[in-house]
Image 1 (cartoon, rainbow, N blue to C red):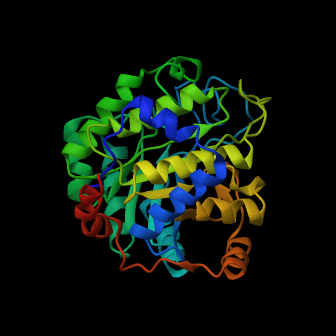
Image 2: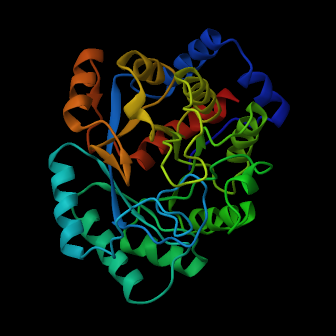
Image 3: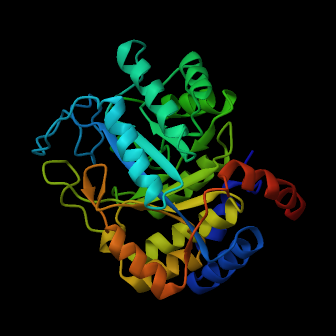
Length: 335
């Protein structure tokens, strides 16, 4: 199980407000104590059901509440997912994530098809992650039995700001699903989004909430809002690289053994900014020219960046759960 520092909110706030260069140095030191700093995991994220989601998340192109001119797509076939997974594995990805624009998982033919998709992806040897919305304990158990490695369910922001982001679910709904995932023995993938209009205090609240999850996250995506025309947050100002770097550094210090994923918004970052993100503890990216429905750097740009920074794609045999187990004892010793 992934570990984190047992820090209270005041301690996290003090950490967050460190001078940025001091924070980067501290995070880089922690990162090198727990990971090979030259290795970055390459992941692939595929939208297996696009658009028409009944949630009203103010940032999301897939919400049925907003007119974003997104072309809806029904649940993909198992064969289409298997083909995409084999292509991703061949291109160097070691984790394959599937996202469906659902509010919650519903038992029936479509969920059964997702279980078969998980089995097909697992057969490639990659880690398998899904983000399907809320689920219950029995559904989590079935996902685990099908071979699911991790389940993504982001908190988005701190609890006090959450109602400004979405009104169709509660913060506790998110926590409950994460609890079901962890108790089923599935790795928890949980992070947030910067640029939703939140304050620094809200970002500190998010970091604190992550340390209080019923199961510590093995994977923490740090996203920057990609404004989408037609959504309530379309006119929000882009998050600065320094804000993103600060959040990554704090996340790395608080969760030494976790995978910290530099996720949405990377298409607007310079090579220098991405280098600082890696220095501050990010050790995973998503490959491809699209992240679900938003723009993203292509594989050629990623390879050029790796060549520039002398980074290497993490090999497939360095499984996340195995690595976390290896470091768990050392993290406890560092408390």
